Image 1 (tube, rainbow, N blue to C red):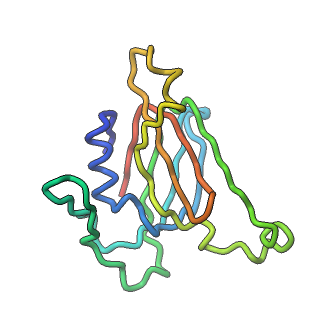
Image 2: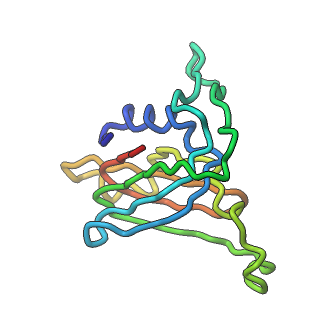
Image 3: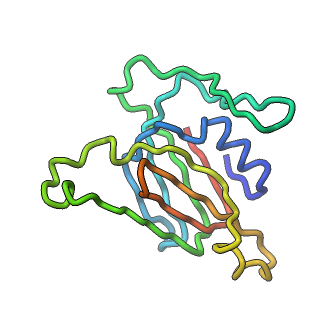
Length: 155
């Protein structure tokens, strides 16, 4: 499903628990660098997402982890019409000194959210096309920031 509207994009992310605890397995450049695709090991049994209370403030997980997460269930997120892509790895010294210290936990996502941070979007406000800022946060300081027009999620 492809979306360009902020409300619909947020709904797509909520319906997938903002990919909390999912593992980023692969990253691919597509369409001559205008799109980037993330393949994630999806750990939930469903795509029902979060429950939002009547005040719209509290998010409560309603899903359950799959029983055998060792067997990958890959979901693909594609960011289309990318204007900016920024990776901040903040590799700890122990991982640099011994690459064997890097495991699946390094790619465990805390959250993928539509952030619309003005620091990233101010340059594009005059454009006819609406752009969005996405923040992909991992444990610690590691993060990816993307500015693009469209989000697509494939089962």
